[in-house]
Length: 249
Image (cartoon, rainbow, N blue to C red):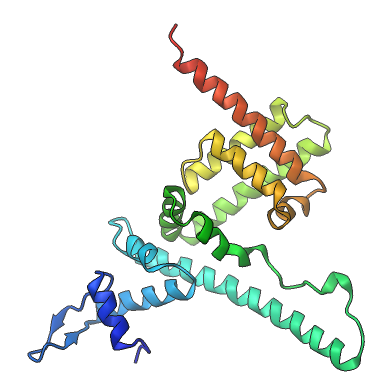
């Protein structure tokens, strides 16, 4: 019924991911409805690219909210569906161009390609870090209203950084650093503790990698470099402030 092999079910049982509620007299595993509901969540998380260890940590978390997790799963699946739908459209256009012996508009050749497609790379690079695990745990518990608040706050911060750049405010000035600090606090509040040094690294990565830089530069040309410099200046200021606070008087 589930399409899961017996070998896989045995493995899930052995690692404590999915233990059956009972056993038959012959020793066969017996799965109750609650077991099947847990298996459903496991299979969806797996389809979304999460490792078994990540899934187990999510499901066994005392604060785990099944309804919230199902909503989060649906949101992720919907995004993936939209991404793949865009890729299908791009492929249809490419096929049509090849069949007719024409060329596609350069601006349309990469429609449907989304930086979110690099989520697997992010998981591979940082999946073993406490920050990634904490971010995964928190994200799984958020409901629609919380995701809307996160997105709205993110948009406001990026808009403020773009406005500061447009106004000619220096990246190491008070206005830009205030927006950078708000960005750092945003990450710490919603996803994982982000100390100044880590935040500086995020800014550097966002400007160095064209895939990440485009998220800022599509808002305003050169914004990724401005963000990098603002994050760096703020990290230096925050580090100095912390050092001063811890110095003996």
